[in-house]
Structures are given as structure tokens and as C-alpha cells.
Length: 82
Ligand code: FES
Image 1 (cartoon, rainbow, N blue to C red):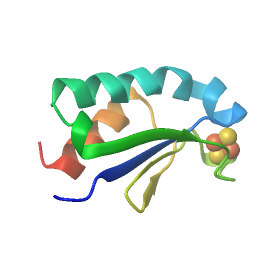
Image 2 (image 1 turned 120 degrees about the horizontal axis):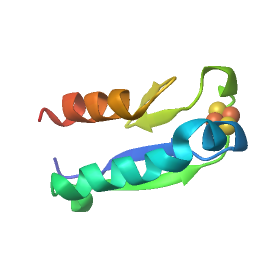
Image 3 (image 1 turned 45 degrees about the horizontal axis):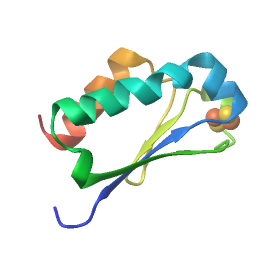
Image 4 (image 1 turned 90 degrees about the vertical axis):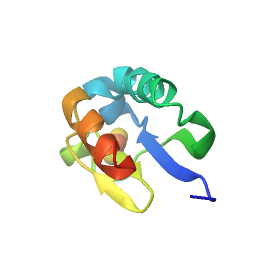
């Protein structure tokens, strides 16, 4: 994996107040724990226009809807094959 994997968390007001406020730390802690911080470009973004299906998280080109802590860890583990 030469290019960094882009992970984008929606920090629009709907997603932020429905869980992504805490999810930033969950993802960040997970990346630190797995020593993946150098391999990813993790950042926030504004509304993905999917508020109804939020909170939203994007990994590479794929958008994950209705994420919670458990789902986030699951999709990250699957994506990175860990
Ligand atoms: S606030 Fe996240 S999709 Fe709209």
C-alpha cells in the first residue's frame, strides 16, 4: 500500500450530534493502536447529503452509513484485513 488510504468522517451538524463527535476519537485510537496513522489520511468533512442515513464515514471510495462504534471497528478491521 503506497498511497495513503483516505478516511473521511462526516462532521456536518447532523452526523456530529448523532455520534461522529465521539467517532473521531474511536477511529483515531484504533489507527494508533494498529500503527496505521502513517498509512492513512484521516480527516473530517462537511455534510455528505446523507444525513437521514447518518452518521456517515467514508473509507477510500466507499461510504458507510449509520455507523456506530461497533460498526466502525468492524469496517476498519475488514478494510485493513486485521
Ligand atoms: S451531516 Fe453527515 S451527511 Fe449530513
